[in-house]
Image: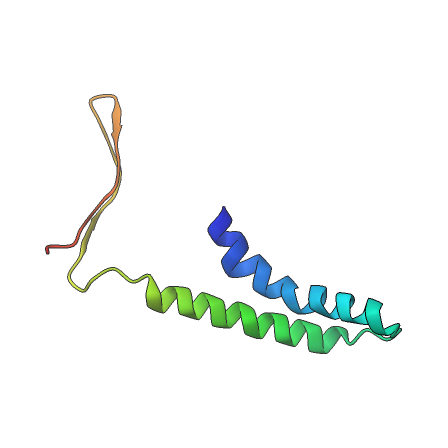
Length: 82
């Protein structure tokens, strides 16, 4: 859950939160929603892309899905062959 917040929600909301803090200090009245949305989506894509590139499993890894054997759930296994 914390990973979802850090990777998806925080980058999307960060520009808006920063803008509202800045707006309160400078007493501005207009809100550039399109620019805030574009910046948020850009940061969202950047953080999701960075997570994808940094959290890869090694090449040749074999994933075994969880199984139900003899009334017990056997957890998933990622065999990295190292």
